[in-house]
Amino acid sequence: MTFRSGLPTLIGSIVRQQCPRCHRGRMFRGWVTIRDACPVCRHVFAREPGYFVGAMYVSYALAVPTLFLLAVVVHWFFPGRSGLWLLAAAVPLFLPLAPLIFRYSRVIWAHLDWTIDPPDQAG
Image (tube, rainbow, N blue to C red; front, side, top):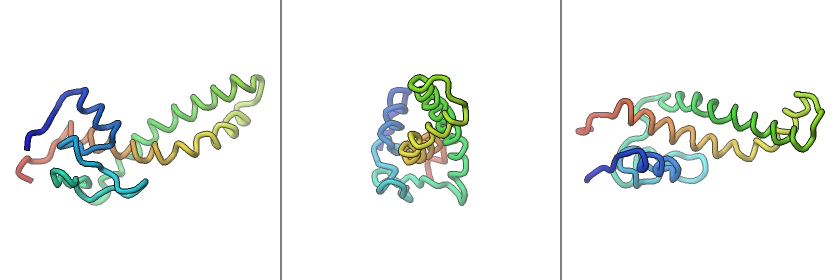
């Protein structure tokens, strides 16, 4: 099996939530259940127990700017309100995005890990 590489392939694979190894298999089964392995190349997604703890950092890096942007948008429509009011108004707008941030944080983490430290090709 040949594996594609390059920045366009990497970005496309992340957007489509596909395997970091073959860029074809889907990483998720349902909304929150990640597959144990890629259905195409059999790459195991969780290398070790607690593997996706690093995805929490990616999730934070995605969530904070998103929430800030939503607060700016709310401020645009309701100028002169306090920061706490803006945050309270932005949180309900943010909640529907939380599942997407959860999914993409895991996908980005898996791709980042694969790019920095790919497992042995024999494994």
